[in-house]
Each structure stands twice: as structure tokens, then as C-alpha cells.
Image (cartoon, rainbow, N blue to C red; front, top):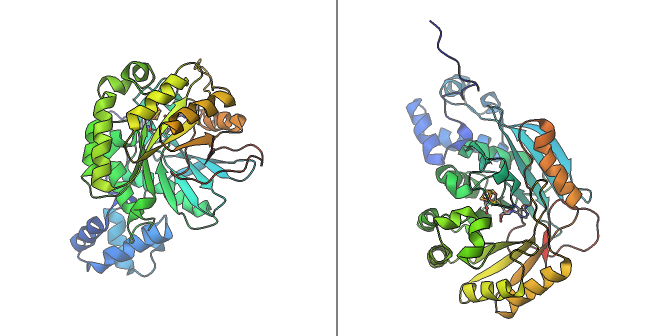
Length: 387
Ligand code: SAH
Ligand code: SF4
């Protein structure tokens, strides 16, 4: 008797150790008849050491390792390609999941010594923002918590210093993959996990209101970066279609509640598009909208995407816009973008691999990032600096 085979190989049914919280690991080892402290030992191997095989857990009895190997597995990503920015400020990885889906993640190196990982939460994205290549390519599937953690481990393994920050700013909408994102955040933050500390995590969201409220109730002090891109619904709707469901007034109210619950300063991202949302009037309106909120605005000059007829404004316009927002009393940073040819190359990682359409790739340094010197060659990622 033969059953019809699905097109893609099904993922193994056993849980991926890389997606388990310490209490899950403890439950697992207890179910296998081992003492609870084995859970902590496994966490040390999986998250502390980043081992890829249970046989490497050499302080566990061999018989227990065998039982563990039958009950669980360690999910891995196969890094297919690694691309360095010319000035060494970033390394981008293209990695294949076990079912062949590819995701990109980035190691960002900052002059002050910080090392930040930018991770993807979905293969593709369903939100359809007008300027975004990931959205252009459509949605494939959610990534598991283990697949998100695997990206951070792959980045950490390539970092010359301690991984200090993780930003959820890669492919996909983190809050549309809520459970896996929050689970990954807990593992990244925990001392038994990657030990990064929750205050060094940033989630960037297109603005899913119910999930922002839910996140506010998690008791996690994660920095929230909200992709606003326009001060009015009329202007935002064509750029960010989800505005139809969650108008700006509701979004700002949810942000206010997030701030009240976490005490974390909010970031608003604003991709600046020539002749679309970059006028002084929009800058002033943005300032008015955000007045009184503990926040700052990260202005991101558009990274042009092949096939999308939107342009990046001239530098003078970027500065003028930033000035309007700042004059309204809102702190502003402008992400300095250089080396658009490398940005293009980045999208081509997936293209060249034949496993996906070009993806936009402009992860931001964490809020409050250091200004990047104006020289130093093409960069993959912008730093933030005064306009
Ligand atoms: N889905 C989430 C996180 C991933 S996108 C979100 O939208 O926030 C990360 C950031 O890159 C977002 O602020 C997004 O608006 C921005 N971005 C997308 N396409 C871009 C482009 N072509 N140029 C510059 N920034 C872009
Ligand atoms: Fe999705 Fe973010 Fe791109 Fe919008 S900007 S399509 S939410 S990844």
C-alpha cells in the first residue's frame, strides 16, 4: 500500500531541541526517565555550545543520548552562501531549511564592538508592502522557533565577539508568526539559552495591533520597532495594506499601551520614498502624530527594488524631512545607506540560488545605534547617524 507523497519532504515529527524552553527540556528528560538537571545540561550543549548532533553531548550517558536521539533531534540550517560587505561591517548568510526553504540572516559588526544578528521569522511575507521585495515574493511558510534560533547560532558561530543583540528584522512579519517569535525571543534572552538579554532584542512589526497588545502582556521588555512609513491612513494604505485592518490611530494606541507595559522607548521606522511620503508636510504631520510618546524615528531612505517603480529621495530631501520631524520634538536618526549594489547582491543571494525571488534586505542596527563613519566603502547595512 503506497500513500501519495507530498512534494516536499515532511519534517521529522520529533521536536527540535533548538526550539525548546528549559521547562520543555526538563519535561522531556523526565519523560525519558532521567533527572531534571539533564535538561539544563542539554540546554548548555544546544544553546551554549551550539552542537549540531546529540552524540556531541559527551557528559550525558551514552544510553541516555540514544534515548534522547529517538525522542528529539537538533534542527540545522545548511548555510549555502556567505557574503561579506566590502568594509567588513556585515556578513549575510543564505541558509536552507530542512525542507529546502531558504532564509537570509545577517551578522552586523559595529565600531563600538557590538555584534548583532538580524534574523528572519518567515520564508516570504504575506503583508504585501508596496516597497518590499520580500512582500513581492509572497508568503511560503512560518519558520519554527528552532529555525529562528538556528539563524542566531549560525551568526554567533561567525562572530569574532560575543553576540550582543538580535533584531527580528529579516524576512517576514514576526508578529504574524507570534508563537515562534516569542518562543525564540525567550530562548535568545534566557541565561540558559543564548544569554543575550531581553533588552537587547528588537522586534520590527508592520503594525499588527492585537499582537502588539499581546506582546505587551508577555512580561518581556523587548524593544518594539513599528514600521509606520506614513503619518495618515490615506497615505499609508497603499504603502502598507494592513493599514486597512489596523488604522494608525489604533496602532498608536497599542504602541502607547506597549510603552506603558514595558517602559521601553519605541522606534518608528519610516522608509522615505521620493515624492510619495517625503515632503515637509508629512514630516511635520509625523511629528504631530508622535508628540508626547517616548519614541524615536528611524528614517530609512528607500532601498530600490528591481521591478518596483519607487525611488529613493535625494540626500537634501532626506535631511529636510528629518529636520521637520526633529523640529516637532521627536528624536530622529537617519540610516546611512551606501553600497546599494551590495543590497542588490543580497537580494540576488536567493535569486542566484534559484530558491526564491529577490528579497529586500535592509536590517537596521538596534535603536540608538552608533553613527557610522562616512567613509569606508560600500556597506551592506546602514548605520544610523545624524541627518
Ligand atoms: N515585517 C517587519 C520586519 C521585516 S522588514 C516590518 O515590516 O517591520 C524590516 C524593515 O525593512 C521594515 O521597516 C521595512 O519597512 C523595511 N523595508 C522593507 N523594504 C524596504 C526597502 N525596499 N527599502 C528600505 N527599507 C525597507
Ligand atoms: Fe512583510 Fe515587513 Fe516586507 Fe511589509 S516590509 S512586506 S511586513 S517583510
